[in-house]
Image (cartoon, rainbow, N blue to C red):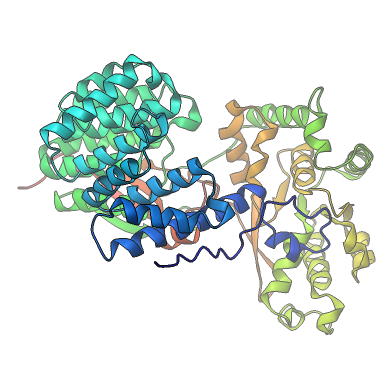
Length: 549
């Protein structure tokens, strides 16, 4: 008998977020319900993963008795008593193991507890396990036929039309000799199309690949995604078919530009390595805020939001935030009385050149150094006298001295800060209730103030795309890119503004050179990068039409 540790550090039931937030530091540390749920699920997975892999160190394939012992120990914790939840976690762990080990153990686990292969959940995982084995070695004739039969059964019962099952059926068929059946299945998804594209590349049928990827552009914008595995499959195809690179590499990168692709570092390096080894130019480089590539010295393509596009975005956003039928959106973040007071404030005192996220600015200064006053040439004060307030006052003073009309949006607890009266004499100040969300106030004030208004914040507030229709997502992002100033704590000035990158932040071509942005391994691991961030790392690529052999 052995004991499985099921201690989970933060195994607590999800609770609503705290009703009151009194400081930005507390606010910054809070997590959303979705984030907490994801963290708890990861902890559950880690417990099951440790239990299974520890047992596998002693024997390659666990017998039924061992599986029953593991499950019994796990179910001593209430978090694992739901059979379906536990089964899903077990199969998720098995999918992370080596193909042969995972498949053998999956069969034993299913038989140990009398599970049915006909069950949709079981079928889903077992098909993935078979497909994973097929990706590294040939299936036996019996395994391949079993996989075909399972997929045909799902097609006959029309389960394949379920969005979550469509890609599973395609994945299963593509692991067999009858993979072409998957080409005829209706309702293609992004995942299914990427799987089919990889299969046709593996079969050296690149013309079929392009036909499949054309269907990807017919999906709604949010589903137009070229998977990293698909780009890697292209790289392997180029290595084996070097004469195909000039035409098809250009076609691939043009497709990436259409999808506004930003690569991850491992994928980008595989692709550039394949191109470089084949005689083409490919170098990792940097692009500074001026938009100049350090490798080819090209200026990246400028991004400018036309005045008519701004007016369209302005009307769409303002109408959807407070327009008819949308009041619930804003009042989930504030109250009718508070919002009406805010509207009066911006109408009476606007438009503004700078709409400042007061807490974001002041909090960064406080985080930089407990003695931030000395660094910023403030009047000396003790830490308990709230350096945040002095930082904010100096920033406002700097901006107003430059002739900027400033709106500071903060929270009511800031009324207790020193220097607030001085700040009010220099700028318009609106403080929301401590339980209100201030992001929507910042966005509304900036868009209301017109095309020459900028937001000053290191928070991109990307969650507020909900306020406009999906067809305006790209326009909203372009506006954010052009009208969003970041900042750092300065040495000669209280604050150094970080100007927006006024050029395309996704794959595009200038002259003969392609510029491909990517997120680094460190950014991926720390989860600090997202689609709104400004990429500093790029690859500069030139596809040669004639390569010396």
